[in-house]
Image 1 (cartoon, rainbow, N blue to C red):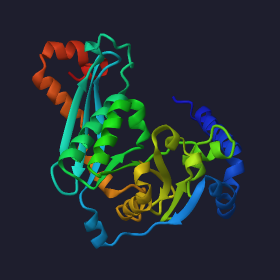
Image 2: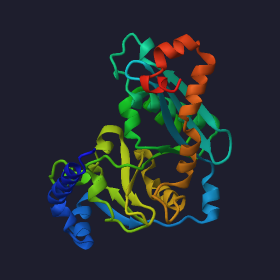
Image 3: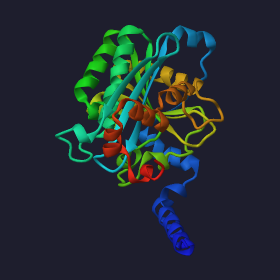
Image 4: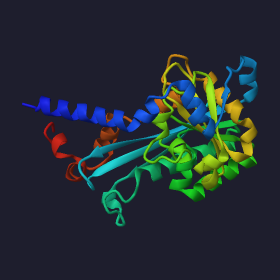
Length: 310
């Protein structure tokens, strides 16, 4: 029987540790936090919902996202299928796929080929294709733009060049903040923006981060902001190229406009792209079973757990 009392005690201990660590910030009322902390990070402004005629004038908007599905057992006996989608509000959907298994990678040492790298690469592939051929006005990437530079700087440079040449506004929407802008600015360590800024902005507010506080500006010429677009207290992030700095508030207004009031705070178009790009476990297994020799499939990619039902 599970040791419920033991687990309960550990959960309560974790709860107390977090309360103690964050007490300095969590005990501040909103007015104090905004005045003493957020004012040092950047400037708070109000966003607005765009009128239908302004949305129409913006032209084609493309949402870009990727997904990965893993089938098999322990490393290296597995297959991963990667898929990326660039979906325009008007025009042709562009997909890209990549299959990977460390079994056939002579240079692989377990997880040496990072999942994030492959996913970033095919997302940039469809973004470049869309920017060149669909001529959108805005490319809305699901995630921060800095991760593309980190995972493949050469391809990111190509994406930036294509967007600038075709006057495409490249932007990244960050649903899960992993930055530490606030703690670095105020001289604290080991605190992330996600928990510190939670609920500190009012719905419809944007905090434009000062360049001197923004590592992304130094490393990748990105202008960044935090936004609260719904009644949910969670804050999201926004990146754009510095060349389009004067469009930051416009794209923030766009994100705000596309986000339902009573949602988790993410633009609806990215949620639509996310739902269409996902690959199911059943689909991957069916493809492997249909187009791979059964002996090869069972020998390499059927886990012990899966084997119980075969």
